[in-house]
Image 1 (tube, helix red, strand yellow):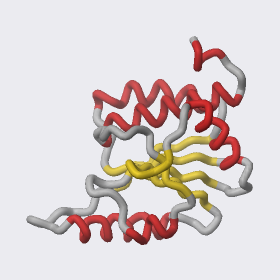
Image 2 (image 1 turned 60 degrees about the vertical axis):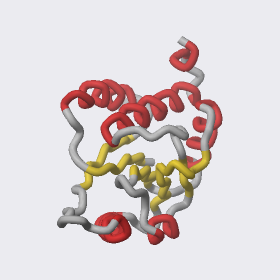
Image 3 (image 1 turned 180 degrees about the vertical axis):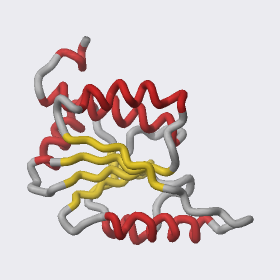
Image 4 (image 1 turned 45 degrees about the horizontal axis):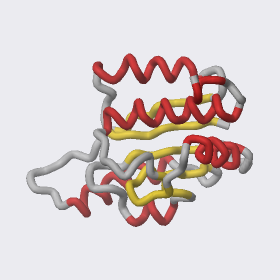
Length: 156
């Protein structure tokens, strides 16, 4: 099974080193890819609804029927690290070919993406920048794999 994290824009240099650290560690457990999606072009005072629709139009064609789609959303379900690891195991056992996690744009997701999503997940009630969320997500994914494999990282 392949796991992907899709996000808006490029990873900034101040975040890249931390991301690289966890990307190297994840190779031991899974096929993982960080996918940077170009943000829709803003023209003047573009309405938030229009931006969400444009983002959905960029993303939906890239999502295949056999993909398991998880939207990272402030209204999503929150897990402890242990419960997230257990949920990740269930998702990986679902028989789907890819699990795609998507970080939405600054205004959230268009309804068409919510309709396609299999799950919504919240990493915190707090709001994080699109740069910082990369590191938080990768660390929690790595932590989940160490929990699944009974390795000491979680309590080290």
